[in-house]
Length: 282
Length: 133
Image (tube, rainbow over all chains, first blue to last red; front, side):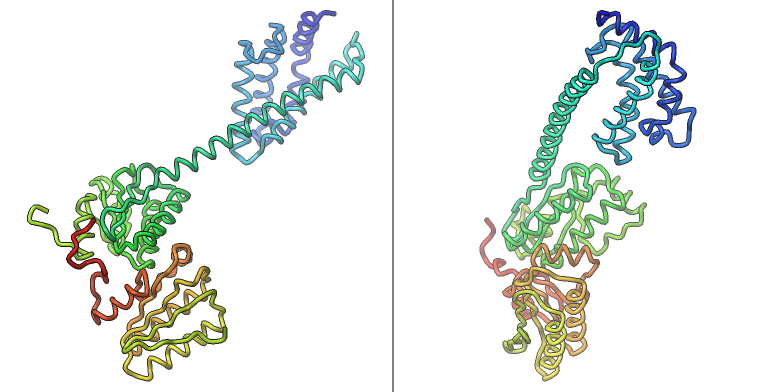
């Protein structure tokens, strides 16, 4: 039997025994962990996956993942795997569970009239080659994960420069959203900037921060308190009107922290605090 | 190290804590500072903690209590030279060293106490005639 004939036969058999296979699949962890107790949903999703496989086998391009039939497979698997990864499942687990799809199908072929017994060695070799492919994919994924992590670190570093504006005055212009990791980095680099410059005033400029919620405000408060513990004063500048409204609306009390509308106002305040007199034009 | 030395410089006491402070030593320090301040003539206490790399909640509380003791006895407390990591730890633990003022170095703390009884803006050694960078 040629391989075209074989795949055509697979398509035929899969289509003929659809109900049986779908029932077997729907009880597998790949579907049950995503759809929980909803058996009907599980069945429907397994059905969609099997339909896509039937179509693929029919087209004879089972080995070419760029074949049009794989679009439907991809759609179902994307839904399932992204849900699994979100809920904390790892790659290995999902791969194992996809492997379990094989058993209900092979069970059918084993009992099929006219089934040819495939030598166990051949099955083993096929599995080995399959594993090789998976290893290659996992390695590639791991490398790109590393690249993303490294780039995130680099972005973190370049996005929080501590600038010396004057003797004893340092500033950090914050651009982009503040999350807890980033605000931790900001806090650390600002504090070591204060030590390095022996600064008396530290300005946090939030002109580039798109929104301030209670969490961001809490991060700002913490940073300001740490700055005060270091013996310097913290000034928050660049508060846009909308953000001021949000802060008031949320009932966040920033009264303990000096705030100014713009970075230049904050600098002026800092200069006054450090005893630098400005000329008439300033 | 059983006891931390307390130096007297005019009306100011200087306590320099080097290395990690064991609980028993911290308690002894609180006692000694109290005794020294109550001996009279002391208006300020500087706790130089620039040599402390690790704090726990207990030490944070002892520092706050020393500050409270001193202000009851009529001396103001300045905690000087907190390291960034220590400052972050205190903030994360929600300790704010209420009652103590902070300075970035022993020198700044001395200037702070030397010039003021009431709070002053900043002890700035560079604030003289030179006009910046």
